[in-house]
Length: 456
Image (cartoon, rainbow, N blue to C red; front, side):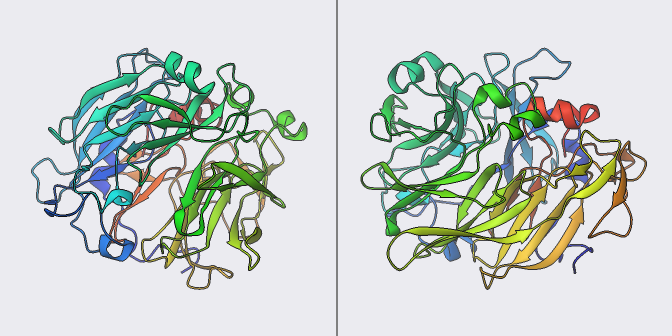
C-alpha cells in the first residue's frame, strides 16, 4: 500500500546482509551470480526474460566499493558477498579484490557476454566489466575461474581509450549480440561533454574504436539501452565531467549545463536520428526498455526533475516521450535549497514487465509501481531507507504533499544507516531487491557527509 511496506513477495531486505554491507565503502549496483549449469547447446543467459525468471537463485553478489573522496587512501575494490541462505557464510563479505590504481571511481558493472548471445554456445559469461567514471580505466575481472574469489584479468588503460576513441569518463557497459562489449562515455579526455560509446572486442578486450560514426557523438552522455527488433538505441544525459566532477552546484542548473534530452540512434547505421527534449526532465539518468523483446516503449528516470517519463515508438517510426510519474518536492529548512527534489537516481523493471522500481536518493524512499498499463503507473509500495528528511536530522520539512510526518531513521541491528537508497538490483524471480546507497563519491560527500565510507 502507498506509504506502507512493499509486498514481501517483491522486496526482501535481509537484516544481516544490510548490517554486513554497512562496513563496506561507498557501493554501487550489486551484480548477482549463480552456479547454474550451462546447457550444452546454448550460450550464456536465457532465451527469454520469462525463462530467466525461472532461473536458480543468486548465490553471491559483486559490489564495486569506492574509496575516492573518503578519508581512506586506498584503491577501490570489488567485494564478493555470499547471499546463499544455505551457506555458513550467508550475508558475509567473503572476498575483496583491490584495484591496482587509486581514485578510479568504480561505478557501474557489466558482463563480457549475456543473453544477447544465448544462441552462441562458444560464449560464456566469465568476465565482469568495471568501467571507471573518473580515471577512464576499464578493469576486466575473471569471475569464472573462482566465482567466490575473483581475480583481475586485464586492465585497459585510459590512454588507449583516449587515443582510439577520444572519449573518457566511462559509465554503462552492455554486451552485444555480436560478442562485443559497448561502454558509454560522459565526455572527452579533457572533461568536456561528449556522449560517445567505446567498443571492445569481447574475447581479447582490445579497444576497437567508437561504436558511433566519426563525429557523431551526442553532446552529453550517461546511460543507454538498445532494442534490436526496432533498430533503435536510446541514450541519456547527465552533464559534462567538468561540471559534475567536484560536486553539485545549483548555478550550473540555471546555466543549462545539465542534460534534459534523450538521444535516439539507428542501431544498424550507428548514427543519431532524433533528439527528444524532456519537459521537466532535468538529468535523465537510468533508462530501461520493457523486457519483452518486441516492446517499443520503456521508462527513464529524471533525477533533478524527480519524475519518470515513458518513451514510445509512434506509428510513423519516430519516438515520443511523456511524463507518467511526478514525485513532488518538499519545502524544507536547513538544506541547501528551500525545496528538496526527490532525486530519482536508479530505476529497474521486473523481468515480467509487471513492476517498475525506483529510488529517491534525497527523500530516502524506494517505490514500486504496477506498470500493467505503462501509460498509467500505479503506486503499489513505498519503503523509507534513510534519506535527508529523517527525524532527528538537520533538515526540517515545512510542507509535504505526501507525508504527514518525517520518516524514522533506518536502524539495522542497532546501527543507524546513513545516506539514502540509490542503486537497486532485482533478483531474477523478482522476490529480492538489493539496495546500495552511494551515488557518486563527490555527491555522496556533499549531500551525506556522515555516510562517506559507509553503505547499505
